[in-house]
Image 1 (tube, rainbow, N blue to C red):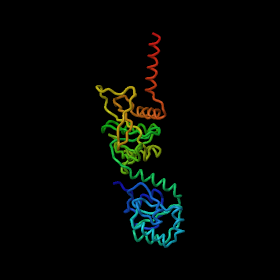
Image 2 (tube, rainbow, N blue to C red):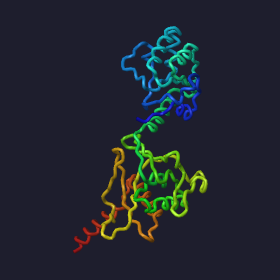
Image 3 (cartoon, rainbow, N blue to C red):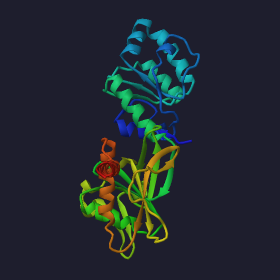
Length: 311
């Protein structure tokens, strides 16, 4: 099971650590959803989502004020006894010393943020959904072309990295070369990124490893990108029939999500970068409702119909 440390949460959302600083790396988050423990503060613990990050907002704080510190401390002690991952107080809500003492007793970090509760909850949920999403690693290159995430696949040595380098020269952005980590953040969305150790590096046979960010600037790279289209590069095979019209859509599957795929034959004289650009633009057109292949087929059909009538 994928997990996220409290330390990563603190670093990403710039949270203030009030207690248990030495436990931040050890305590792990395993669920992407959050919980606001209003019912628990009232004493109802049936179906308590204690594996989730607990969020204290203005509503919970006001209820605790009306309930009194003695009763609130009792309920907070019961909440922490479930070993929740952490408790975050939004809006810089002041934290009672009694709560801080309980935090140290049970080893539950208490964090604080100036953000309002709704916006913080939304960003935390979004970030955790990405970090805890199912993930696989595949061999390939991921590039941002005109805002479309294009995944280049194919056998080792087919020229994926060289195509990516040419695309960078043409103003597009590299996400990852050689290894692509794919995360399923929803039934419609796949996110690709590079492993930390190879981020921004490209391997070019005959030259070695180059750093795209250092050579071409920060505008040439991107950390994450949705995977919208797959282009599989293949050696030209004269005995194989390749799609020349594009009337039928082909799909491949990653983590249960279908992604459109084109099979691109590679041979001397073919400019792989321009082909990739054209495929990305054509895919973008289709999303906007225009299909060039369907339009050509329509014109041919109408022309044949007119010729038949005239004869």
